[in-house]
Amino acid sequence: MVELDKTDRDIIAILSEENTTNNAIAEKLKITEGTVRQRIKKLREAGVLKIRGLINPEILENQQLAFIMITLAEARLLDSKATEISQLNQVLSVSLITGRYDLLIEVIVESNKGLVNFLTDELSQINGIAHSETFMSLKSINKFI
Image (cartoon, rainbow, N blue to C red; front, side, top):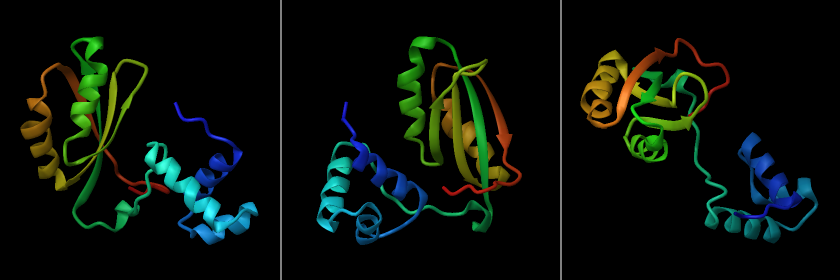
């Protein structure tokens, strides 16, 4: 496990809140830009930090955000099935959760038909799923994907 010091945590906090430059981060933290650049490189190489662009799903035409709750046939399948499901194209995230379901899957699909296709052509091909329940997002508040 990677040890994060206060500077690492501060850099991560700033990046999680805003898209900014290494220079701006350095100014906020009163450290050099080179230090910020090296810290970000170290965090990325260690798998702690992944930087990517985020999109407001409200502006994507014909895109539907949905959540699928999964119950697995066996608890021992949690990690392997979560990893397998996370590799599917439309999947944004997979979370292992508590409660009556085992996994929470967040997907973005093109229209209702796209969701049906995802459920019948892709998710149904994964062995070990005992039950699923799907929830369509009507509106996202402050959500970027």
